[in-house]
Length: 419
Image (cartoon, rainbow, N blue to C red; front, side, top):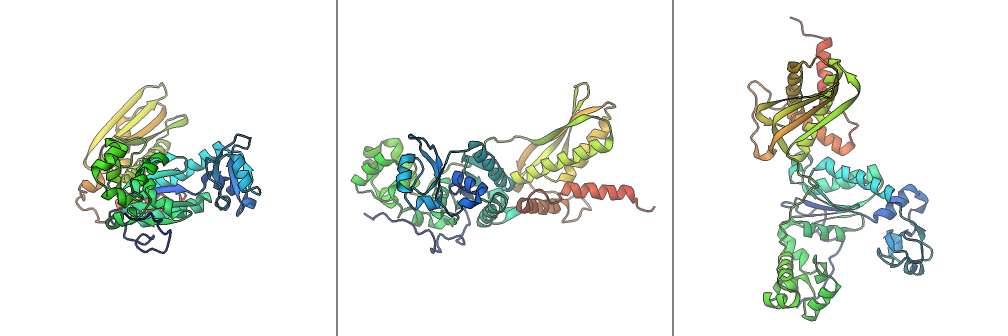
């Protein structure tokens, strides 16, 4: 049977960043030496030096090591005393988890600016399903480059990305892209990528089971894929054998599972003081419609029902909804609907809170888009999609479609058309 090989990190066009990414909607993004990198970010004088983060006492354990420290053999989960003996010149720092959590939230927000299908595994890694983001941001490899660029530009940190058809293969790809790299595993080449790898690269194969498999002559994933099913069952048990055989053949049906699957999308705001100024309420509803529209488009969803929520000064709650003729993800349509609901409501009291919610969600790609009679072929949907793409690339400082809509409406009020 074949000997174990390690996959070259670069120089192999079959799996390089420019490889064919068709059928590869899954990204695994892994921050590089995350805790140590956050420490170096706030202490630039440490750049290029070996930095070790972890318990500094006699029983301390390494949590993270910079790549210069790793060249000395320092690794996560190693006793700090051992790390000191391997690299006595390293800078040893106690962990600052609030700082790492803040950095993680910022990085995860970059991911969610691209897709709502984000499954965090820890503070420093996550799976992303970018199938629904292609319309806005391009191919999966282009999305991976966008994410890496934004993380570096906005957070001063680097990450490695695996792009693949499945979660398991994407995670292997990011591991082999480290540090600060990207690796694409084409759908047609998954077995070429997997089979030379050592058997302990499979999820669920630890030191003990790897030793058992090697005693049977199964050194690589390819060896395991070709092994008789009965031999595997006797070695690791029926359930584990079935699991490993699936992975060894490149099959991993698990989907990216976000923290929460949304049945509706919306936003609300509470005013600092109760208000009855229609202009202030209109601005608030416009901003909420924009938030809801952006979230719909990121999720690749459209909604058929627009709901308005109004909490009055006496804490009584009033709500109204309207079902549209066709599902939408367009901010302008959402705002026009919710403003019509509010003006028809005419609460006649001070308002404490307003909210906008879109219900009856469905996948945008599976929902035919109707063009209103007399409407231009390209209009608000395209303009808002372009604004979303600009915001994802450059942050939310760019002007959004709701702001454009507000400017347009203000100009019309100030300069009414001549009769």
